Image 1 (tube, one colour):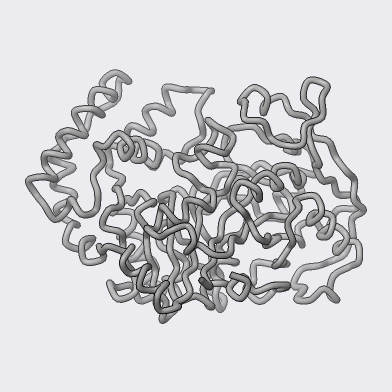
Image 2 (spheres, helix red, strand yellow):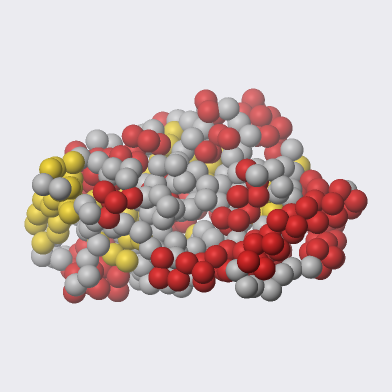
Length: 431
């Protein structure tokens, strides 16, 4: 089909923004297919930094169509603010280059209120959500009380749906001792922006079907990472959507055959934001060095990321679950300062060696990493654009990762700059 799906193979923050931007120059259409404005991509184009949350990365490139698919939950106010922000940077955003699935569910102020109230009630046992209402919005979607983009066109129906929604949520807020939300205030707020949002609304599945028939190249852009998948991740310390490659089809309105090549963005070490198991986490000077060299702070929250050695057992698992054809290895240059580097090849659990991350929450919490030690190269790889520019020990590290995750490295990133990339295989040509 010539289409490519990009997903994170770890816990997110793998450097998808740069890779998606690099690929979007080759695509005709870029589609976001899951998540909400809890995700963040940072793009650096011609020295200009763009921080995107809901908008697909292709929106900053002229001549590309950006689509927000039905699998995304959309905070309409956050979306309009993001559109204003990129317009202020000189980016043209209009219905000609941005489409929103008419059947996508919305995030309303009540969702953020519920999110924060429950996190506060959990205290030290919080899940670590961003508090932006993503989880409650997905809950409403599957409970069939959600409010969708298309509902904005029908005022009477919209009022009824808001009242039904708040009947449920205000009861919860009262129980948690939090302030309730007025249905009229929600309705009035939506009416103020409904016309602006509806101009972007469309049956995007029809546009994507036409694209496949005409041979246009589609890039499916995932948010977060496979280990945050609500089914396959470190549950319950996950996001509320499916983040694996299979969601690219259902979250966009295309058949699975249309997805094409699956590229897994993979950091050369491991990071995670928020609570949850992290077998290779480093709470020492090495962990601090990874964080400082990698500038490991969240695009959306600004939270400091937890850092650790590369977990090959985890990435091997996510490549199988998502059907990843090749990985894009990012931030190799962060490891330049280490004389010795470790790779996790499996785990010890109750005296037994296991080669995968088990599903049990208790088992995940008790895993001890089994490490293989690799010689560091202790020289700069930053900005390398060919294999000849890399030290032999750095190449050895990359090849060992390929062996352990049983998936080839098809693209290697050596800095945040778009052109500091070593390409072994163009995913669009391989699709």
